[in-house]
Image 1 (cartoon, rainbow, N blue to C red):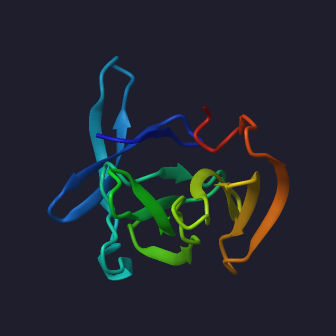
Image 2: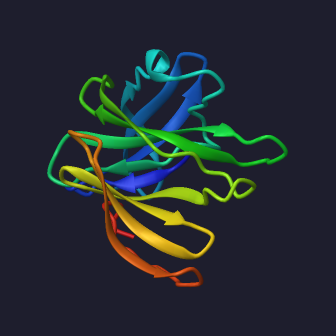
Length: 169
């Protein structure tokens, strides 16, 4: 199971992966252990492009505060690398698992100088992305409705960023 988040009511939500696709599971932790409860399958198959994956290794799961939405990252493995780089962000309705919208994330590749993107935080109406470029690091707002990317801040490349996110971490 992976990753774990806490919703606005304090319930634990985690992702599992099986042949039907990823499932978001709401769990009861009152007894001191994780007891699976309600599960919703994320219906993302039609949203995946060639080479993209939605798995425990590529999934970033963030809850949008004060809503029934979750943000799920999809990615591809770059040639010669063991990690998947994000290529898109799916806004998912947690009540039934349907994808409300797919938003593109620019190419991540150190070899061509485009830098690397990370999905960091989900907020009402937008997600925050970090773009680590060759010269600087940007905090970028990705609008959930329009897909517009807005640079909020540009920092020196070696900056350490700490963002409060919707996972209550």
